[in-house]
Amino acid sequence: MVNKKPAFPLYLEKWRLAKLMGVSDTTLRNMLNKNYFDELKKIGYVKTQKYLNQKQLAHIFPMGLNFEFDT
Image (cartoon, rainbow, N blue to C red; front, side, top):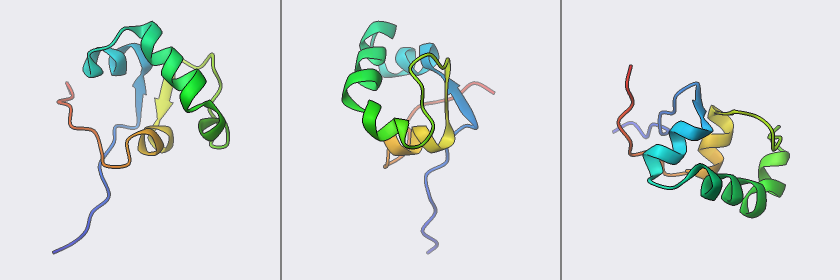
């Protein structure tokens, strides 16, 4: 059996991630900018960005995302 890394979209808008998680945009912003900011800053995150890239998503969700994505 091959141990594959979780698949992530190339990027995900913050508002869409908040919707998928069932939280408000403000709650997600607080989580990212308070709880995870120091860690995310090391991998290129800035508070004003509108999208999270694959590396940032993988850092926040090490077990992968269990959401359905529209193509």
